[in-house]
Length: 188
Image 1 (tube, one colour):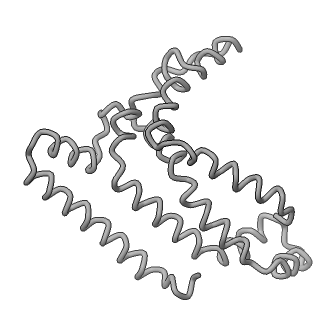
Image 2: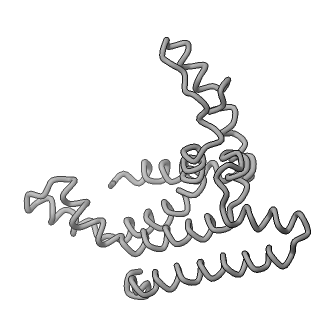
């Protein structure tokens, strides 16, 4: 993308929802995707069949979590793409590569470090997210952080602490795998 104003606008649109509270962003999915929500209202007005219970299932949870954490991936990827020399892209295009081929063989490998960092940031936040599972997933798709919260809330501190250590160990293993597969010092 060469238009700086468009780039700034797209980045701003990606960041804009994060000016509100995390819980508010989660709760706003309920009136949109509930049985009597905006989406079903619009589908009914268009004469299309309504969606059956988009909330309180794993699909809704994945959709909500993706929308909540995509900015943590977009930021580092945007930064990595901005660091690519435009002449490299122009050279690829002048050699006959299509826009898709240029993206796949030139831009994506050069932006890999930003993608890895973004995915790692998103993974860190996903490990600790329990509110989305409760409010959007309906508690039917338990997550480890949700179990920690439930045990801590019921006064079973040893179990909650043990699960927290397990969650921490999983995060460390994921970090170690990222560090082993990608040398971030050379990627960035």
